[in-house]
Length: 336
Ligand code: R7I
Ligand code: MG
Ligand code: MG
Ligand code: MG
Image (cartoon, rainbow, N blue to C red; front, side, top):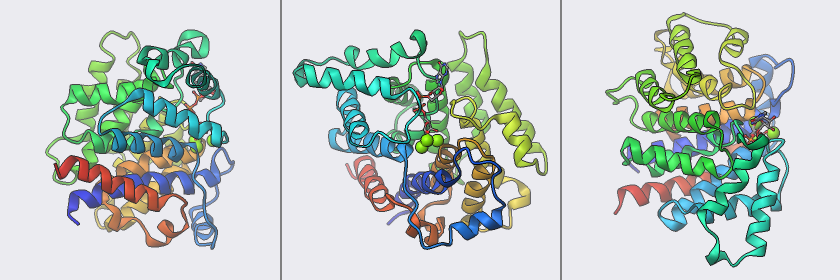
């Protein structure tokens, strides 16, 4: 297996591990100490995945099966999965799936248009669309699939995957920035660009017509945090956020990974850096499964599958499927 395939697998498995381990503490207060957390993860239980992984699997499955983005197919896969197991999702996203389910059950599949598929998400939250982190949390497979796409193609891919459920620009832009971070990490450490510079350029273009430069402000905050030797989890959560909105979770996930590239961690092994990413992201509290899953996708891509602790891999549900899907996405992009 070559290095890039190991990074593909690391990314999807990293996302599953973050979701499974993080879901143990979603909105739990106070978050236990690292020691106690590690003890919990040493117990012989299986940690189940949640909606974050369920939706990522559908994204990967559809891209692999269709070899391109087919939004109608992907909307059907999201909806069928939600109907099969509707627990753990965001509080209002179910409305989208019920409307999509009505479309799929009342019309001939071949007659359904993309416009109809994108309509339910646009109606969310009085017509402004959702700014939850549900589009960002599921996006890693798109980074693998779009590894060779140019910026414009890649942005379109992520935007359309997001639009099926999330129509608010904050929800979509969060997904584009998370996807960009994962794609960047696949080329780390031999990447000649700086992640924050890249994200800033993207955020500027995404927010060019918007009065609120919300993601640019978060990127500035991450830059400041990167200059500090260490900042407490509490302060990071206050500055970057730790809730179910994309704006208050994607920056926290990106920082959780970037922090492990600080000079002070330079003597840690890649495996220790992966662990540090996950434990720190969970210690931020709040939406721990999603922040750890997004951070895990980036760190897994950067440090690769060999650096994800074997004892964590064993206890997380859904790792084998993630591995297989990553392998297929790799074949699709590198074995043509
Ligand atoms: O974004 P979404 O899929 O939720 C994902 C989160 C993750 O933490 C998962 O692990 C799971 O637990 O849920 O689902 P949505 O329901 O679209 O958005 C999540 C929540 O964000 C909503 O239920 C709202 O509370 C809030 N929200 C909004 N509130 C007001 N106005 C999202 N958009 C808006 C809005 O426009
Ligand atoms: Mg979840
Ligand atoms: Mg939940
Ligand atoms: Mg969550």
